[in-house]
Length: 487
Image 1: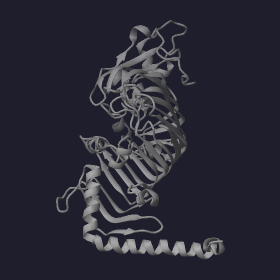
Image 2: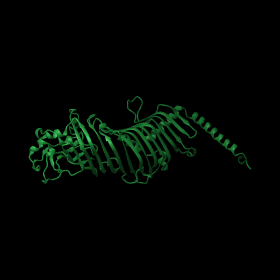
Image 3: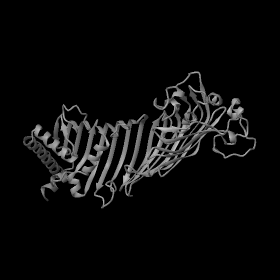
Image 4: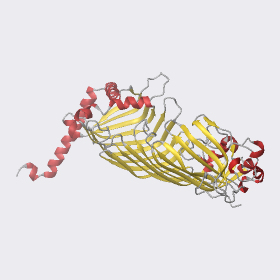
């Protein structure tokens, strides 16, 4: 019987002690071979080569060897030079990268865990293009695959804006866990993420999309060989807790994406200032959307399909009395239906709510004026990037206003849009058309449909709600779910 068999515990202790002593000696040798300045220089050069952007480490750089070989650095900046006055593309308080022992002993670098503390990324289409062009790390590209990696992000921020600066997005308070991230080289012609697998959990304090603010966002999901899906995505918008799901399939060419969201009781009083003056709108609405497209830059809107529905009852608009304005239209000829109709164009991202319309000004009018919106429906269908009205109308206590429209989302143009006051049969009484781009639409003069009234024009003086064709025929403009006023 050999010594190991006779004394297994003592032998194990001796082996472990030998490993510890070896690690200490390795650390001493590394410390002697590389001073702190030399280590910082080696690390920054390697990171700069891999990213294709200048990397600077202003803090400490250290190596430790237990329980895993780990590289730690603090105060790291990416893409700027000290004293240049330019904000770095990325910066973080600390970064830690641990490596696996076995591959390291055979001369290979195999990451175990990457942790980023308080990272801040400032992205534009140009910087994303530079990063995407670099591809996977050199060792990974050479071997064709990446061993399983765990990524930890704590208290991160991401800021994105277009090159023109007209669109912005930001994520703050981001905590992200990617477990068992695995990648291998895709086949020729496949998407770079077609072979990615990962388990994901994430949360963010706030997400801002231009003026829209989402808070308390939580998300979990997984990807298996390029097919990603969430199983629990929740967020708060306008004081309403909503839920949704996203799928991304990188196995198809181009990649396919779907989005489903639903919110109950969105509080309109919380609308952002650019959309409506504070206190001008109150009440709550429900919102649901089911969309699908191709997850590829430049094709998202062009290949968009789906449905968007917004609905609510007993809403209040302060600063304007739509019924009084419409009743006075016959005399003044100054009221724009598009201003009133902007309320029901809130389907695809409130495209017409403020552009070329005095709707916001109306809501900022006399504080003693008020409109009660009895019922509001804005139901749209989208096919190949064109949004069309399916059931878009609102009713007040005396009137019903409806809209028909076709909007080209990719080119941001109005193919056709008509807003109309309709009578009890859904026939148009007053119409107004809009054409042109979203940013500078051409609003035509209102048109009183005298030939179709079947009743004297003077009835307008008694209120548009009084108009009834008494069984006469017309080309029905609206036959949706919003009923005519009962009075």
